[in-house]
Image (cartoon, rainbow, N blue to C red; front, side):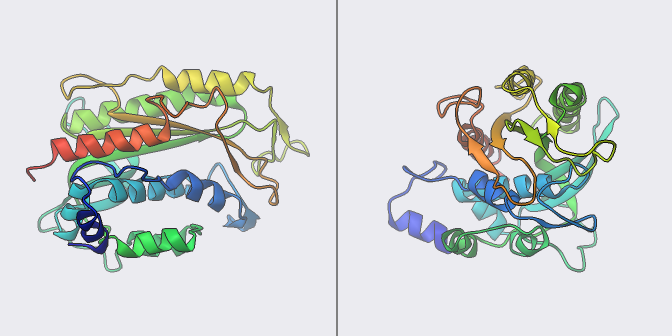
Length: 300
């Protein structure tokens, strides 16, 4: 039993249920990490739309929170039943399509070679410049070590998208990419959990590293652009039974980020950001993920 599970059991925590007062960590980690400029494509940047760093920050945090929340997942990891894959190309059985997904939790593929230097949640901290507080680092140390491995049967698939500038222009593509994600995941296995995450920028301007045609930041018509983006993602299909189509979990996080290399990235909680009791609030997404995982995969 890992130290975190032992302490929870000694404190009378219920198996399979988030502890009362439990604080989820990913959004705090995400905004703090994006507040610091790091080397990206030869420049010191907080965010670059053509880099996958922000997506990996999001996926790292969600996996961290899911492991903190789900006793069953921690036990599966500790017993070697579950590994993760990064940027895994998933092929659906019907229809025959494929898509590269940011993160998958899966059974290790029998007989497949293990990566020579597999990543873990610990090693990814340095690789992606993830900013942890001492308390968060302590929580990570208490978790069983989950490793990257050869992907077998996919249990959970995560697709993370961000819309930081040129919101209206980007929305059709973002919607299509998110919508195709759950279709391919459930075409691979109706039992797999398909999770979608969307981060959207509420700032009135944004310094885009890819905008070389004109000097200065992109200007945003806010809150119009933000409302349109949140409404578009809210319309994505969701499902409550494995026989239907849609995401098994979906979360929206709104941030304020100028991306000037100095100003911090901050969380926005005012509308149209999902309220705490909204099913699209980040905490609701993780709690639903944990519940569905504990219910669906208790027998593996």
